[in-house]
Amino acid sequence: MVPFEERDKIWLARRRLASQAGGPRPARRLNPGLHSFKRREAVPGEIYWERLTSKFLRLVTEPMSGCYDSVVRVLIVEDEPKSAAYLRKGLSEHGYVADLAQNGEDGLYLAQNSDYDLLVLDVMLPGRDGWSVISELRRSGKQTPVLFLTARDSVPDRVKGLELGADDYLVKPFAFSELLARIRTILRRGPARHGEMLCAADLELDPLSHRATRGGKRLELTPKEFLLLALLVRRSGEVLSRTLIAEQVWDMNFDSATNVVDVHVRRLRSKVDDPFDRKLIRTVRGVGYVLEE
Image (cartoon, rainbow, N blue to C red; front, side):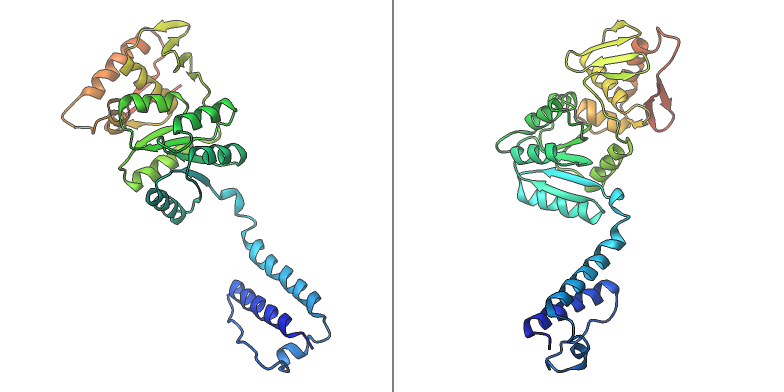
């Protein structure tokens, strides 16, 4: 006779097995002499439990074994509980595996010691701020993509975040659909990462010194022109809308009545493209601009 406590284990395991297999769950057998256990009396309880457990684990893991490569792991570093819960729930609902760190020290530790596909990083964090987290991360050689998600909305803050090595910068409050779109854009770029120098064709930019050269010749750019060119180089091959450029460079919502983006792109072309035979900046009519190598 299978001991009573072992029958409890067996019954629970059978319910889990049936649930995983999509079949009906077995009813609980209260009578220890019922036939459902009688045919197993010859098998010691511990051995039977071990076999049933291994079968259960096999049913749980085998259907998923081919799916791990497609899982996208995101680390959220956010100290505000409601925002963190909102982000984690939203990303999980869209198929991402989201982990959470509520301060800069924990975020840095997890980012350095785990393989994440993306970090969603706040700036104002307890212990260690977001600037320090990404600086230490890049200094240690970790090139995980970073998206800053913060209430700090000034242009100098955006510039600082991008220059420290962030892939994108989104200001709170934000639309979750936009966050998802930006995450997908970052992930589409693949594993290739940017170092400190930004390069495209014979164009080189040093974000730290704000120095830009093409074919070894120094380009004299205004701060806005440099920020615009850095954005185009970082997203080379990607068509950037005027709205996105206005948000990232001028910290403003794009107004179709203004031509500030077109004017600055024209001035930038006069310095980056006009003196050279090969043109890098291309207009996509009705959409925006793209830098192609």
